[in-house]
Image (cartoon, rainbow, N blue to C red; front, top):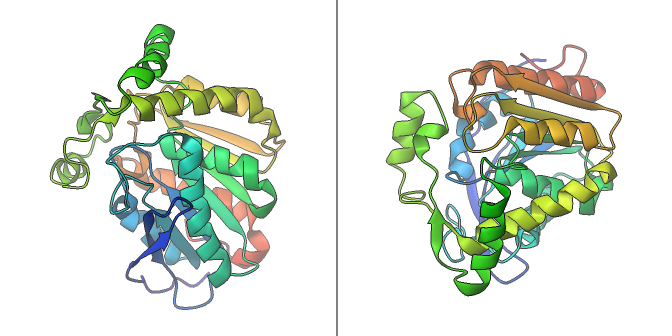
Length: 292
């Protein structure tokens, strides 16, 4: 289809379920979009990291919304802290309510990165009928830590829930020096470490998903780098194996780091995502489909 001009990000807030102001960015094409992608970033990230991704989608006629979960980016809340991942789901619900009011009757896809993929899966379990597809990038379902360490997170969360215990080096996210430099210079993720309660909440969320993957039946695209040091590709494989969908795809990128859409092979990754979307929304995308 004919490419459209790149829109400037619109920055807004919406009141979340617990009264916090949830920040989000949106990018729209000049003409009416044919679908919506809602992006949920993970740790060491926020909506501002998806400008290039949004440009790729907007140029092909999709609208993009990216949320800063509570305590992250420009959203309200204790830095990097969450009681339960269901609170993150409520943040996404607040933004998708805005999306639905502005873009009625358009297909909605979720794209969740890392811990954002966990949130996306939880949201899908609660809102599956409202979604057209789910994309999980570097899914944080299995962490590179022994079981006793994960149990320790849960135990310590009862004693010192606000203690910051886990730091993920920015160098693990991308092989692109410029991407790592941008992360190092970003005040919104400076010295980011995850509190015990946040880690315990993610462990509990992953335990729930392990039991309920079979209930996810919509089309699913799962992406993971083989050299991801923050999350295990085997977690994405497990999601693929257990998902109840008959329409599911797993793509592993040899040598890929944790943030595939900011890694050196991002052009290939975005092309694969756009091809998958084109295959699931061919009528809406037009006869020529997305530009890949």
